[in-house]
Length: 388
Image (tube, rainbow, N blue to C red):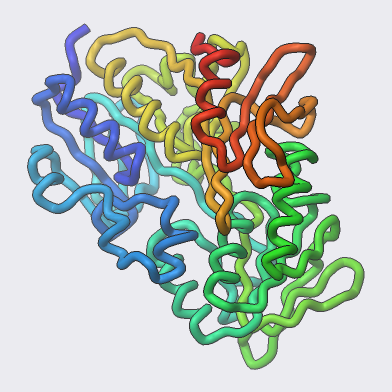
């Protein structure tokens, strides 16, 4: 297979940039264009809910590369140009300004769009956190606030709650789940994490739906729960999940289910690939479709997409991995931990806040987790989780 003479990457965050860099490392000398909605230089997202939000890092520290490093790629960066349509056959992308960018191959790396509550856009003081501008706006809002309500008990909501407590705010976390991260990590870990937040002073309103946001004079004043209780707030963060950014691909002919649906090679159509949070692909080792929303996947999947663009025929079969830092807790999870699995402590002691756990389904270990025990979690991964 002859490599394409030109490649267009739509999205220049971690996954898109990693694809471009992998292409150059593997000897690609063709025309390379990165098209991105963001006006900023490519930056990392995990610090946005922690170091950048807390003010411990200046925004520039979250940049993935300096300008001179980007210049060395020999690529054209088109910033501040949202993609609005894709012609798959012509491999042409139209932008919001009417510009049409064509290439011999297209990589879709448009990431996620945060979900919102009805009515939130009409109220000042209500935030989501997806990009750098969101993080800076939220930080500014928190410096003027005393009471924060976080809606959503997932990873992002929990990290924001922990950061805000560190900033001295009165924080309430509300969510539909029984405990924090219960859907993702199961009851055993979720109970420990929920207790950790309570010990740090977070007020918890879990297992109840949010009915509406309340406001006065155009500004949020609280969150009303389905129980009738209203949680007073000077600021609200809505962290109820995100959906793949695929609206611009409607009518393109690509299969859009849970993201851009791809084969095991991350190929969505002839000459069209997807990478990162937006990509749903068939994991041959697990025999199922996966879509992963984490930083590690963005980098690892990019290596496979770049190789396949240059003529390889590699299936993408990673061992999934993600981490989260909250207070003094560092959690690393490998494989596919889930609420359905049986969870047991393999090493350490939860009461000492250092332990490693394993997840079993049908008698087989499907995931491992370290709570302030990164090394032990890696050892368990090596022992029990092998790449396909």
